[in-house]
Amino acid sequence: MEKILYLAHVESDGTLSKAALESLGAAVELSKKLSGSSLSVGLIGSQAEKAAGSIASCGATSFFAVSGPEFDCSRYSTDAAAIEALGRQTQATLMVAAGTSRFGRAVPGATFRLNGRIDSRITGFTVENNSFQIQRWFYRQRMMSTQTRAQRPWALLLDPGVFSPWAGQPGTTSVQSIAVNLPELRTRVLGTETATTGPQTIRPDAKLLFVTGAGWTKKQSDGQPHVKEAEDLIINFLEKTRASLGSTKSLVDQTGDGQQVISLLSHINQVGQTGSTPRHQKGLSTCCHGEEPHTVGWRFINERRAINLDANCGWAQGKADVLYVADAFQVLKKVNELL
Image 1 (cartoon, rainbow, N blue to C red):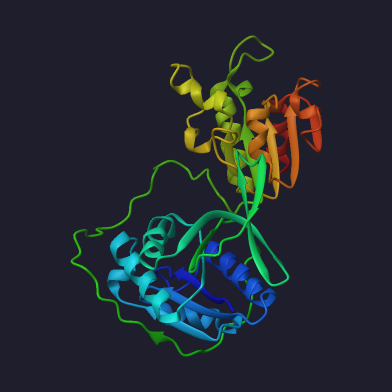
Image 2 (cartoon, one colour):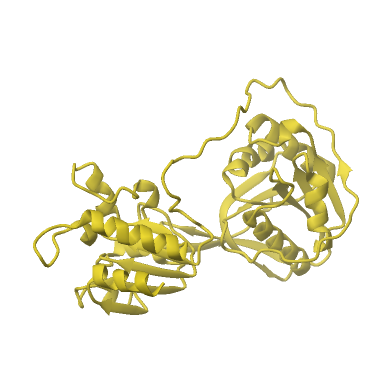
């Protein structure tokens, strides 16, 4: 019989993030498919009772919390100690959590202390004959593996954007507080700073991913490049649609070559084999030829469209649902007018 422990760190306002609700949805589904299993909730943060009330109807048999101001911030020593305490209290055999940067640092160490095993970047699971198996992608999402482990406890870090978030009615529930003996804290969290001071361009929850290719900075029909005009068109489009901005490697690399580039872009925006693999509902690629290293990053985009003047580009070879053979400058200008 599996004892499932759902782990989450509480936000500063007492809510749970979208990634945390997605992992809760997976934990609830798993507990239903594994006969004889039980589900417990372990929360970390000073407003754990408020967070527990928001998910009171998830079907968990018990709620536990490690509270206190020292557990509000992301810090390895406090997070690992809290996860270890929750694991020992519940005697969990399966620990399910979102694969956030905070848990990605702390859960492995806590699992080692519990003499368990851990797997991350999990994108699915199957249950057959009450046997539990996980699914992971390898080699830039070209190969998927199905695997299981006999070692317990087994910690599972789920990829955000894969599972459906849990949606239920809030309620009231009793939360048992767990005391943790902390080591001497050698770090102090003074605050947070944003990574960039410019406009926000990376929006993981956006429905649309808008990707720019190197064609935006090339010479246009009049024989001259129009990088500033391209930047204005793209900024206007992003502001109106609240889309997330991506880019090809060839475009972001131009910064190091000393060429004039779109100021919004950096390697953080890079999508593809050497960049990110987003999971937006829709994707629109512009001025990109649809080469394999780039399109591999679109593997989990549900609807793919592209704008390119070349009717024989890679997007036309079955990689896009719709290809618009047109000038991206003219198309985006008209779209912005319509918006």
